[in-house]
Image (cartoon, rainbow, N blue to C red; front, side):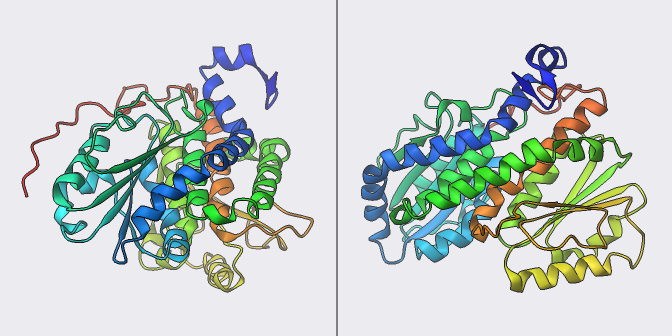
Length: 388
């Protein structure tokens, strides 16, 4: 088997096998996630029906690091389809400032995302929510059935959805685990539409295959450009993708490439000053025509001030923008992916860019942190007794 012209043996020698396989295997993983949710639909529905029976239910989407960014892409879809007030709050914030996000008398559905569930804050956030709120429902979406979060003990209602085994990434950087949990959370918010949404899964796979099999050399060449900064921009559900994109590139390059993120409109309000002649700017375009107007305006305005070294964009369809050096087009046959699903596939360019840039810098993508500053599971965090 070859991935991007590398044999398995070559990837293993480079310390890159797990990262390459986990990025490349995502389309197949997404199908399995859909199938597993379909098989558990009745149980998940029964659990959610109990929670959503509370008229004033609050939905809190939580996780640490990459897992926290999933919630940023899903707040809108939960608000619209579950029809309950929804907020994304990292476990790292819940642990220290629960009083800012929780209310004792407000029933809370805590949806926790975690690859291993062994990060110290994962169980701590769930435990604190139990202590703070009178009524809690725990929906745990994780990649490890043996993890501490999956086996968290609570006196409240709990449902644990464990993703297929291949979602439990072995590499340092979360790739398939991120997109798999993101898709799982999205599908669970729209359980009654699972059959209808099958077409969205087809489009997701088609778009991913195009990035993985057609555009991979373009992305590898992009990684060879001598940029030292990178900025990722996204709006709405793609804002979370922009944050995860910058983290992925920064993690896989061991911080050699300094990365930032913002929304398209927010970038104008000061953060644009970061752009210089060593900066890559990557635009994650919405496919909502109204939103796209604002995004195109920003691209037009990028000529004011310092010029970026390179500007690239990802869009579902449309004409390539003349102001960009490079545009990746996902659809050429009129297919249309719902905007809510775009984040699932839109993370791939940053994952691939981080992989190739890591190799270009002489690092090992599976374990890029030379100093050991970051690890697969965060260690060394002390959890102190919760005080209300």
